[in-house]
Image (tube, rainbow, N blue to C red; front, side, top):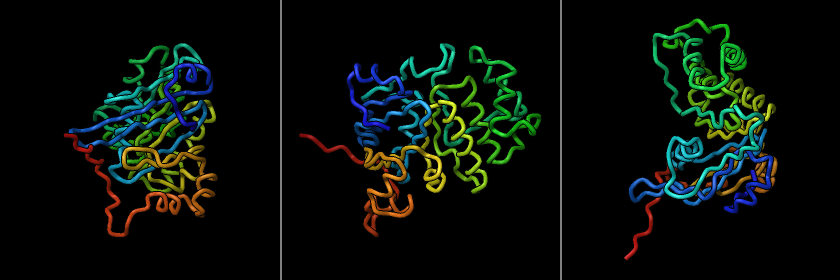
Length: 266
């Protein structure tokens, strides 16, 4: 993940870029959550955003996915980041995916597929196979486990073969086996050229699968490096230790963030 700047010529010149967010800022009232955050994701790159609870990860994911507008900054998805003209721009998996009960897994994906161009039964079948839900495709969504519901959410997000995939805590509440399975699927999607940005606390999986790790705290990115570079630069042996060292929290300080108040002006 390269440092992003705001010149359009640079955006145009980097044909490998799938998505670039430039100087994103977002506040809620007088509480600033994001302050000039820039993120770029290349085709086939898996970027992990890591930060304390309340550090703004979900807000950043929503802005990148186009669900929430920033107060300042922009999100650019270059046309040359797509493999075909009919390709969907962004697939988004929120932190708490919810689906209407009374429909099966297959019917749910078929419903969402109808909103996308060039997406039909073949794409639904391929998606079910890819996320590992084909054997339960006839099951009512209300009877799915938490892990299966998240896999269904991932399936909905990847319909239409988006050039960029944005996921907010996709492994939240899942057991280690399901987390490993989910990140393995993300890795395979990245291998196919999808640019992926994921907010997650599952540092062991991130250390294994992510190409780039970015630490987000107090409105900005503290560091953005590969897992290997991050361990070397922090002098730590695991990503968990590197994260704790980078946060530099006092032992009496809460590790839960709630943004920061903008400085008062006269």
